Length: 225
Image (cartoon, rainbow, N blue to C red; front, side):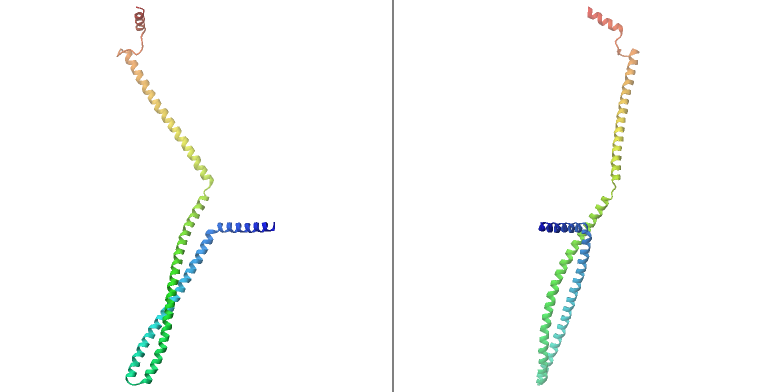
């Protein structure tokens, strides 16, 4: 029982933490991106420091190379003049400079390797940061859209729906009225034509439209015969 209670407490704590994270995800993301941007800035400074050290070592190497060339030239001149003492002193100085030169070259190699590694990591970090920033922009836009959608009052939707229904009824009545008007026009036209035909027939213009009594008697007599 105690184990179940412990598991339940841990589960509720995890659920609460997840709900809190989900509710504040965009705010958390913004701060994480600010932290990441600060980290990238510090990384750039570190690369710049290493590059400065490497530049200093290259300057030292150039100075040592110039000193070696000068000492070797002077040592040769001393030997030509049988000044072995000066030549030996120059040789000792040359040996010390060569040791310093070897150490400097080793330091330069180390700085160059470290600079390449840091620049690669910095480039990858900047690429990932830009990708995350684009994703944050999309998330910001989506959240603003959701807020606007959520602030639309229900009354506005209902009013629009009612207006659409009213417009539909009005259009239906107008269409019906137009149909009636068309039918009345056709009826009036037919009645007018019929009246004109009757008037013409009564005046003896053309065949009569209605059977007269005399015509009916003649037709009946013909059937009797």
